[in-house]
Length: 84
Figure (cartoon, rainbow, N blue to C red):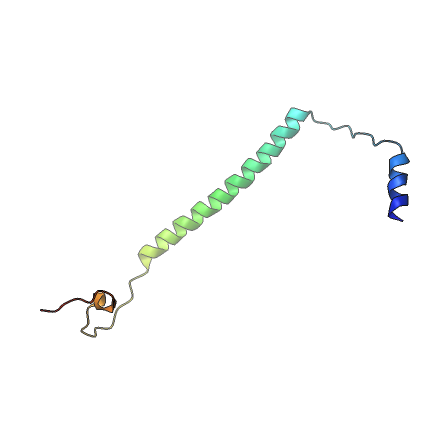
């Protein structure tokens, strides 16, 4: 069945190219403009997200640690601090 379709396509008349209202340089410029707008939108959104995250970090207060009397650096097990 596929062979019949392929043979029918090969024997049919060649395709005609569609006439475009724009010239080739104009089409290229349109494509590049669409790519630039898409990239610009992505960069603007990522910049805004970065600014929002940075401003939210200054608003958040650090978590209070429970005072257990043990310095925080003593959590390291490889190099324990010496208390003289």
